[in-house]
Length: 167
Image (cartoon, rainbow, N blue to C red; front, side, top):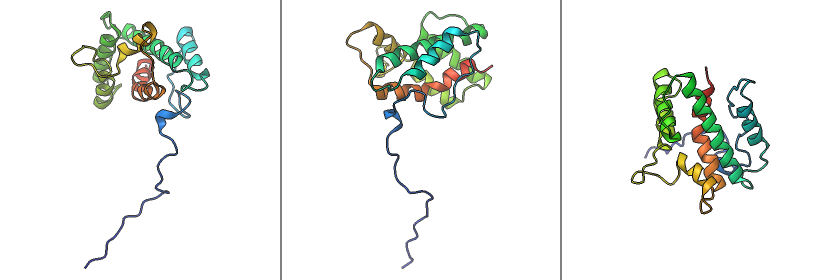
């Protein structure tokens, strides 16, 4: 019988000490940040305030509200800069911006598909979390975000925000 050969793998083979969604900071160390002109004082203020959150697990509502502002300001900037019509609904504007970004090579097909999955808000097709859920956190007492949801959303959505400010 032939001997069993086990492939060698570099590193210790241990899983990370902690899942990434259980981190304290929304912007993890070394995370790419959008380059925002100094004239964009509101956007810079939102980024600053997000960075001041010491522990997302202790302030998930604050993080959710600030992410909503960050996304809305970013989408609006991209839409105006690229002459896209206002569709009157944030989810629809994000989907249109993704299509534009994909066509211009600012997002890959996979990135655009992932971001657009969060724009599905029709009752028959909606997932547990989408762009409208961010709004519900603000207006409904029954909607409270889990810190892991906020971190995961940002991990999957940050490419869109970065693309909005790239140009």
